[in-house]
Image (tube, rainbow, N blue to C red; front, side, top):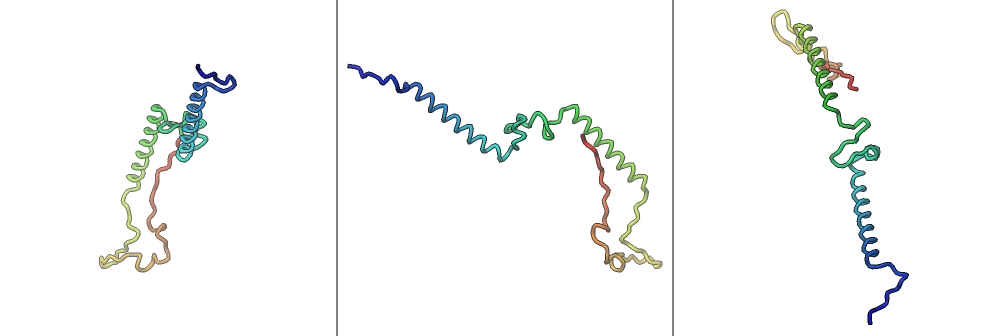
Length: 131
């Protein structure tokens, strides 16, 4: 004689489906926990995933058109810098003194003891406003 099932208990199919659903939720939670270390919460809200940048905000990918414009601006800035260096002409060495006899003395031996390293070697940098 076949066994009679309890009508108030869930079926085997329902039990298996519930277990599979819980397993999937645990996997998603574990994966999200790992993503928080790599991807910022705000970026996650804007659609960032592993290997994908957000679709908006400051870290969104730059479009090809915008990239061309930025490269053009960088080229112009480099050209301005080169023209400024050429217009400057001959560079005078500030850290070397030449005596009347033609003997070369370093200025660091006498007069530059009070100067710091930052004052002796100044570098010119190119500044760009990137929007």
